[in-house]
Length: 194
Image (cartoon, rainbow, N blue to C red; front, side, top):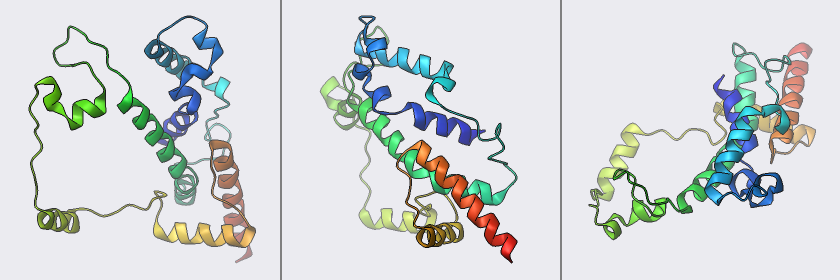
């Protein structure tokens, strides 16, 4: 189920979602930029079918229990989702938070509040760490996940198939869906030939 929400999130987090100035239907209401963003996300979350989103399970394209399908869906969509999440984060971090009565929510831009807390009289809680200590901690505790979210073995298989078939990595959700369907078909054909 988490994948379905991630794909939906990637579909609604387009330039229009982050910069709703381009949506005349929303802008016509004379709302502030923040209100337009809230309204867009409300509309997007309640009307998934308008965005052309389909649940892969409903049409028989995805089965949670199928390891190949899980790996393939990660391979085809993880980079797209990551790019969209970075766009949302980048735009969120530069938006202006309006003043409110809530002392826990200071006004300003999130990036400025985070990187320069002293501008609002707050304390900087950053603790300097020696570079050697950081490298040791990373070596002992951190493993870098595949950028596509799938196993290295599936990544190698998918890249080999894509090269043989002249397929490209997707740049949007529709291309991701087409690649997903193509890869599954080609993998199934390969299994049937053996």
